[in-house]
Image 1 (cartoon, one colour):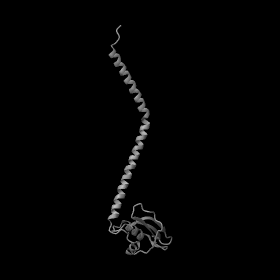
Image 2 (image 1 turned 30 degrees about the vertical axis):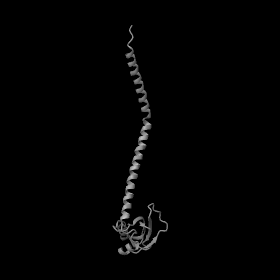
Image 3 (image 1 turned 135 degrees about the vertical axis):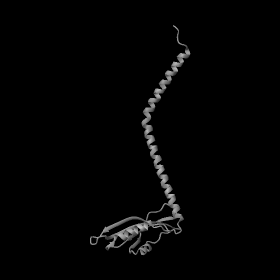
Image 4 (image 1 turned 90 degrees about the vertical axis):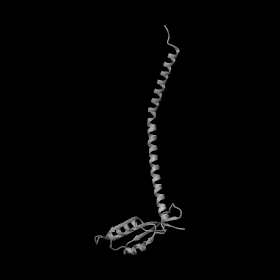
Length: 171
């Protein structure tokens, strides 16, 4: 009997070897899918976090540009804002506010106590909202914390204490 030509035998051997390599690579790929999937999920989370940080950095830069553009670098005194609204309160500077990470600026906090008696709550809350949303040429005050304790004697009155915070430029 004649044996097949050498070229034919080599061709079938090459086809068989290719199939074996393909099967080994496929099995290896399927076994590594879990690792690749977890790696891709982690990378997607890292990209999401980087995008969030980029957005936050953009907000900080915009805020800094806003504060740098203000003609007056100190916030309007709280006492003056209270007088304009016809309200009375005890204003105390908070001794140890947190430090500001931006060079040349510091955080200023003030405690505003509207008194022990029966103070009407609605005008105080309106003043706090107006103070925080005021369009001024100086750094705005921001309400950090408000404590309201209703009066047992008169409806709509009570004790209100607020903590305000603003940035101010120092040289």
